[in-house]
Length: 382
Image 1 (cartoon, rainbow, N blue to C red):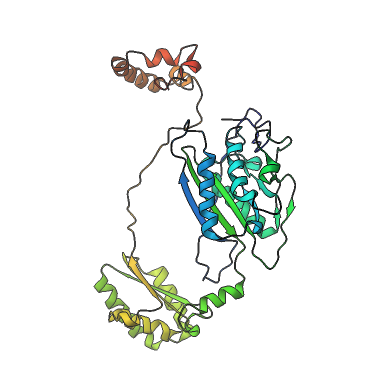
Image 2: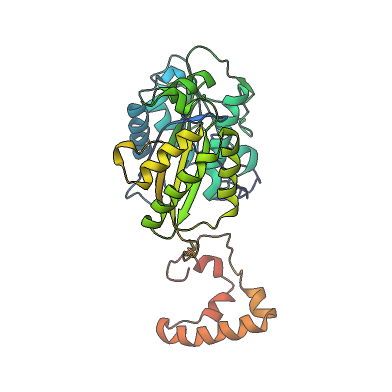
């Protein structure tokens, strides 16, 4: 699956595999009712599995198409409003045609103009478990900067892909993404080695004025949510203790004006020990905070507004390390360790003695066999 060119060539005739790379992306998910800067909106997501195929690494165009039908059908997005698709696009002769067939059949054919597609793997390689989120970041930046970057290393179209018939076009040069009255949408695909398919639709973020209107229309008085809210966080060891603490803070805030409220909130957030039972009360004015604290302290469910309570996870949770077993391997990769690392040699020899009794063949002999690469084609040996 790895390219001898040292390049990923998505949808190109010379595509022969991908290039492994390293990287990561951190995204912050937030509700669109928050008046913070937003880079994009998540419109719809979906995932499915190829099920049984001819091999673990072979994709299924049928199930990729089913996923696209599910995601775009549920989102009710006009196909002509899709600005581009950030494809999985690894640059393999089997995977690229399957993905193109699904994209064209579900999205391309129904459009009035060719659907632009590309893959960030041509720019940075295949980040493997982080590849999907790298594609999502590219799509977000493209919408934000009104330009879709080129998909590189595309010289001759893959002859197994009917680009014209599928109404697809690989984006080979920077493409302007003009803004208009209608929101622009972009789709991002990512497929797992074991047959899992995932797709997400994103669009332009809501304008700030629209966000404000949505915030004010949640069924509460605008005066309680307008402007910058103050968040007061309290914690205790039990729910009863938390109710008692809320009542104490209600009493304490009698002497605090709106200006002192922020100082109290900062002090409780940063200077008090955080225990498992948590309460967050928010509001613009001291009286708003007091009303919510009083209702929580008295367990008055009819007046429990502008607050969130619950149990926080403990900090001593156990960690599980999961190893997939599919790494950057090559035939004979243990020979140097066996030759020069005494500890490795000792343990490997001990394991070989026990293994040989069960398998009737020697790990040490196979490790040093001249035809090891050929033997590794056998699952029994690999």
